[in-house]
Image: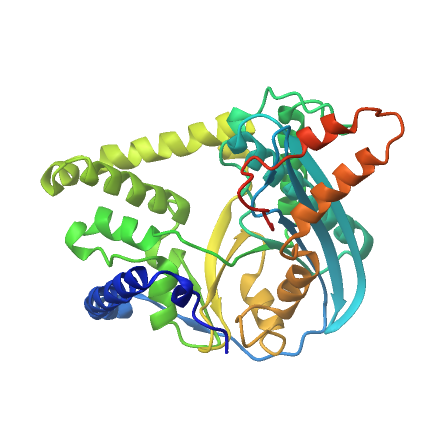
Length: 399
């Protein structure tokens, strides 16, 4: 058993943290009890559909990627790496796999670097997925994360000059990622698995329909982890209807909470809720256009579901286009899922293959430096060492 790392701190800090842990436990107990009461009131409104246990006998492709959790920060530049790949299964047998990798060095702000890195990873993921689709014509193509998970902050990097072979500017990169994403959506076979879902669409819908008093006060995934039986599927539309996408209700919740925290009263917001929803919709469309230069009315319609195979793990969220038979997809993996994560085995297997181990970014950056130091065309090696000195010289980063 590993030693508690807190015990290595000075004794006064240890005692203060242990005291804080006791207080946090008391607060957590009260919150859990309150949440359970509220969640159980919602239970009669949720309709779960039973899945039939089946043996997977179709060809299925899965694509995923990984990127540096943080850049290796040196005085001259920041460095980061990314990976991607696909696996193809015939039933439970792996019949093909392929991988990509790349890097990014950047000397401007960290926010634009993270956006660019995420887009480069997304491009490699989408490229891998489409390659698998063209080569094997699988029944389903599993993707990691929502279709447009890469959208955030894209508008801020459109005019950045990249000078890469495939992408001259940030706008070129965005367009290619979007084009591949839309092609995958148009196949009618793409299924996005959202492992780290944090949205609160249910609370947004409850506030709009009933009022703030009906708000559960937690994420949708938490609600469904408590209420959803194993071997079932649940559709957001069965509760929220089809008028607005769950992401719109989640955005409504965020906007409502922001105004409440800024001092607006419940009564004031209740009287303005239709106006608030209209503003959320307008903002939703505006950001899609600004970030991706896409007309949201031309994007294939999508739906969100939750699937649960076992009560030993939380359910997971999926996003699909309207052409996808998501129940058929879910039933393919009733006998081919990881009981530890609750996810279909293919998504866990590709994730394990492409995930960057700790220290990868540091090792890559040191390899770049070593190659420059061996370069006979650079006479003054001191300028190389200066370029690669850690921005924070107190400790060596292992990322």
